[in-house]
Image 1 (tube, rainbow, N blue to C red):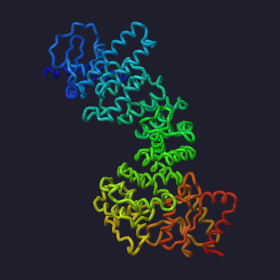
Image 2: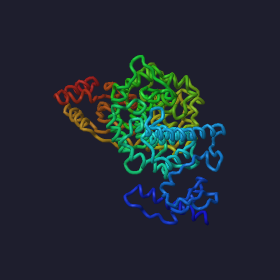
Image 3: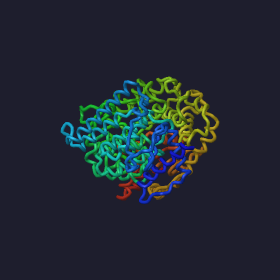
Image 4: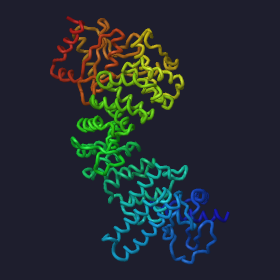
Length: 609
């Protein structure tokens, strides 16, 4: 009871100081809330100091009341004792020798700092610079996140922008390494909020590296700053675009994408030129992420750039994407498996054809380095390659036929991984491979509730492609679960009714009618499984008005793999497909030549004379 009372005094003083800094007027914190704060403090740290004008003590000791009552509680709150020096013994989780080394570093830092302050600088440094250097040494010598946050609490008022960014970066790294208390969350730690307040005060002095590290750290920690801090960071970044280097660009974009911040799209658009300007010249080298310096393009920078632009839905330009694709093709062996997977997935999402050499390199690595891939990486690589039909001469189909099911570790994948792999195999016609049969068998182990609508559509589409390939099941005796044939079918059919008629379609239909043919807008095949833009039923002609989404973004006259699969499905159902591409139609419509253009296409199909 006495202990809780003392802790309540502590929490009240500390809470009052912290709350006052968050708003123009302090807010009342009830005794019950303070007691809860006190109990939480006691459960997370043995060292709890009570700050009061006349009373200071450390839990577990019976020290007398402080005689220096004139010293304010705010001043005493700055007092800092490293964890490894508390209670006269080492408490860090490191070995004894490591603790002694850290202890020696701190002692030397304090001695040198005192000397620098009295002599006007150490080694030619000004006192302010010397202080910054020593603070950074203190931060980087900390062995876990708890020590760094204690340093923030006690000495954060001395930080400059480098110290502030270093504290953020080191806490994030410790979090990634698991060197934080179990159950710790940055969002609930008041010391992280203190660091945020310090950051706001120093933000206008931050350089590009500091800004990038701050954004990256928030993403790693899953920390969403209060107010508009990340918006202010984005404002500062936009004023320093010319100073960005590859790693800073990719770290920034990764952070804003991961945090789903609304400024991510704008940053992606304005930072694309910085990536292009730093692209390695022909004959240059890429480095592994661990060995990359600030100005170097690393394999991780390539992968992260592609992933972030694809995730944000921002096309950074054909020149940049082609340049990155050439590095993937030429240096694939230096990329990690996850980086290759991200790259393949990104090009598919952007619908940018990376070139046959890049596709072939990705297929080769998938086959030769399969043990380095996780099941998710295998799935993302497979779906990424399948969006382009693989490399020339059926490279992806041969890859699927060459691997054994055990290499893909299907049982370790989630429902979306299984959907992606099944569709990818079916899309290139590798139905007779053992991997396809294993993927379908894996569906029997899964429950319908595990799959999202998009995954159900992919699975049902794979089953339809198998049926078109072998209707009588003489070559491929593979049966799908009942829930695919029933529930997945309903999901698939929803897209045949959810259609929108464009002005492009209306113009084409009106022109065909002017040539004396009857048409049906948004027709469906006899089995009801595929929709048709415009049908001429009397001639069994399916007219498809294909806009830009049916072609690759960089090869605007080359049909995408999905468009080819649609045409194949319509042909297998007895339709003669007539494609009207947007890049030919628009100019003809404006110039008045659209009618003669359609007349020629219909004459080729034998619909009119």
